[in-house]
Image (cartoon, rainbow, N blue to C red; front, top):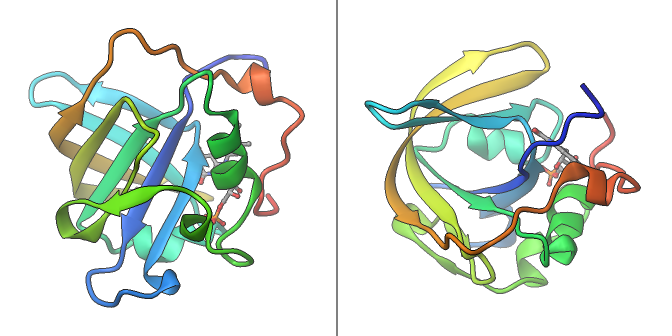
Length: 157
Ligand SMILES: Cc1cc2nc3c(=O)[nH]c(=O)nc-3n(C[C@H](O)[C@H](O)[C@H](O)COP(=O)(O)O)c2cc1C
C-alpha cells in the first residue's frame, strides 16, 4: 500500500477550554476518506502516539484541510514536526473557527465537522465526522504522498 497515492489532509483540533499553545494540535493525515454520501460522513484516523491524539480523542469539532500541491511547507510542518516539541500554530497563519478549532489561512478546501463517533482500529483511532461547514475550490490540485516520499513523520511510528 506504500506505493498507492491518496490525498493528504491536515486535521486540526482545539481543547474546549483554555487558550495556550497546549490547547491546540494538528497533524498530517493520509488515512482519511468520505465514508457516506447520505448522510454526508467523513472518516479520519489518528495514530495513538501522536501529540494530536490526546485532544482528538475527546474533541467535539475538528477541521480537515486538503493539502494542495503548492503547500509542501505546511505538509512538512504538520507531518514532519510534532507538537511534543514545537508549537506548530506559532509558525503558520490561522484563525479560530467554531469551538476555537484552528483554521489554516492558506487552505482553499476544508471541512469543519462534528465528531459523531470513535472507532478503535488498533494503533489508530477512527473518528467519524459529520461536516457542517465546507470551503471548496474546484481548481486546486492535491499534494500526493509520492511528492513528499522523502519526508519522515514528525512523531516516531
Ligand atoms: C505521508 C504521511 C501520512 C501520514 N498519515 C497519518 C495518518 O493518517 N494519521 C496519523 O495519525 N498520522 C499520520 N502521519 C504522521 C503524522 O502526521 C506525524 O507523525 C506528525 O508529526 C504528528 O504530529 P503530532 O505529534 O503533533 O500530532 C502521516 C505522516 C506522513 C508523512
